[in-house]
Image 1 (cartoon, rainbow, N blue to C red):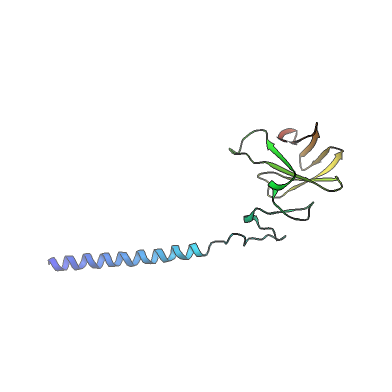
Image 2: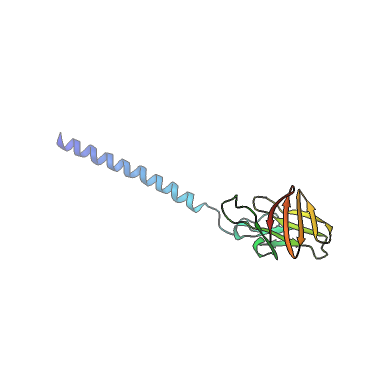
Length: 142
């Protein structure tokens, strides 16, 4: 009887080890099937995992934090600082706005020499500093 009990315990442990081995194989397969960084090009060839997105004005993939105009948020609702980035067309007729939380950039049309509007946004240069409003509320400043 004593031997039978020991034999049953060994069989139970062996069975548990086999189940654990199968679970580990599933985890290993899942890890190898993950997306490779840089293997996520969008329809324009921009790779979001490497920080690139498409700029309509520049007609190329860009990193928004490298743009010439960076605006800081007025309030810190997100819990971290996330700048709005802007690029201006060569002829100054349009501004392209990249705002945190927006999936695509927004194009703003020039209204006056230092004012652009579109999609509820108004971008204005006042005393050599850029200000960005959304629906009349100041959101970002340079």
